[in-house]
Image (cartoon, rainbow, N blue to C red; front, side, top):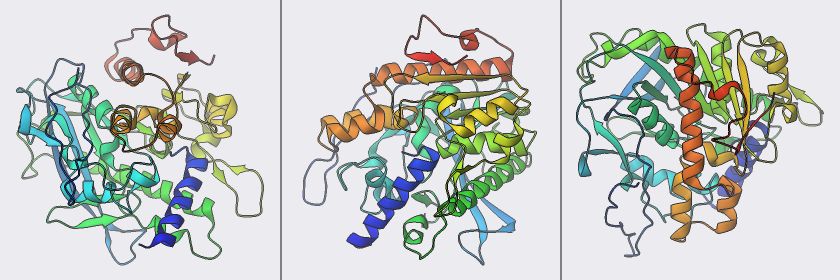
Length: 426
């Protein structure tokens, strides 16, 4: 992709940002180098806080009954990952990679969202050198079944961009399922080495593009993907190649969903469309679309117009188009029309990336010159990374413990003296 193509991709991602709200460490490994011998930046994820070691495995799914909406003539293919309690912790090289090498190279390259979404200098970071805390393909810990939580990333982001939160929930005894939305995500690595990259950069230059229609198509595709994954979870028993005990560890009568940005929109819209999801969290995802070019006003999705009859949590940031529900027409409509339990909090000092791995990884990379201080503040604000991470983990776990396990610590009842940064909107 040439200079003009990269500029076009940046425009699309900025447009998506405006509409959907995109935008104790383990031992550090030796820093990798670029082809010219320059040292690349290194980073690590925070340790999970729960009592359980974590296993992970990836699964390739094909929806034979659905044509890929972005690639006519092809069946829809997805990659998902499971994160779950296991018996033995991973150490050193046993820890699974944060990204597959081909995916990490693209994410951090000239055409990836590491640069477009987060301003990380091209080639400055070896994303596949970052390690998780999970053991690859480990057997599931006996003692299930356990509640299941699905995770959906922001527009253009890969499923790995919420790993810190996902690992923490898994260490607390949940089974997490992360979903890549193929051809929308920056890149998706499939078994055998195939890499599916986003079609979005090439679409923004089309004459007469209806941005609202494009975003509606993306969100509809995400919901269809998620419902297909739910179907596949019910059919896991007997599937070859899965880690021992994993299929039996899923309690499909206790399913929640959480997502950031467009993933938060996806979580609540899927919850509206599919009763299998009992509770959902929207992490700073706007829930309205722009009208066609030349028209004013916004268009609301069915979840905002109808409301929800099951529990949901809204968690906003101090980004320009975010905040609490009073500043967001989709959130406000959802609130007014819902009969299920709901709460609304905003993290002071945060920005849109504060509920992603960017909150932890980007400050580390900025200290090594991989992105500018101004860009860092734009992405994750000025809240201390470890504080933002603790608050996000605590509030998300409190919600799912309450509605999937029946354990209510009353944190979500209102403002908390423990977390004065989290502002409650009554």
